[in-house]
Length: 280
Image (cartoon, rainbow, N blue to C red; front, side, top):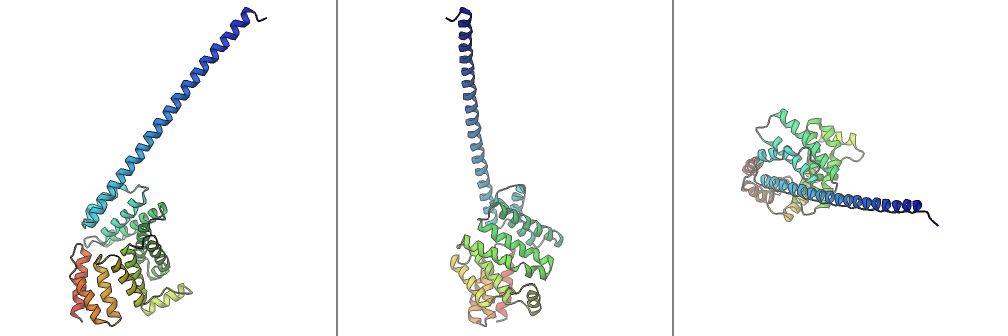
């Protein structure tokens, strides 16, 4: 039979265990509440961050469509540390657009071109499924080639083509990517003999194309988005000139000349189109 002392001891153990259990239960409840609170706050932070990025992208696209190159550059350079691919390729584009401004010095232009490539590369690393990241990476590689010599530019040709084709595959409705493939074809169709010799030294099968192939891409771009870009109109005219079709060349050059000028490039294209029409 248990003694009084042993009963007291057992009772103390039960009470102690109950208190420990209650304490553990309370701690578990508080821990769970803490986790749930952290989870809710984290979700709210993600939603807020996503909303903020969307807002920035909307502002950036508005400024781009408005031709506000300088304002766009000032907006996006605040987010150089971003890990968002959509922000990063837009930043690459903004840097390149600023490099294209007539008031940009040659020294600054070179710095901007290399910086643009860096951000385009980062965008692609963050999201390989982004057609725009592929497109702007290819554009920026091509730009950098202008500073690294004809050998590098030709050596990069297949890389550039690969990314343009990937951009088209990911988004067949992006007229700009299709247009850029047209430029790639046009460039290699008109490549001078000495550059062809360099290409043969670099590749067993050097890159090549035809004016007919370039024309196909330029027309395809127009079908996807009619009158989307003055340069596409100009290149349709120039390609028809290369193919000795003056009637169709005149038609597209006239469209390029009459295209509303929203950017400096549009104005330059108007001037070139007018000069080519004068020579017909």
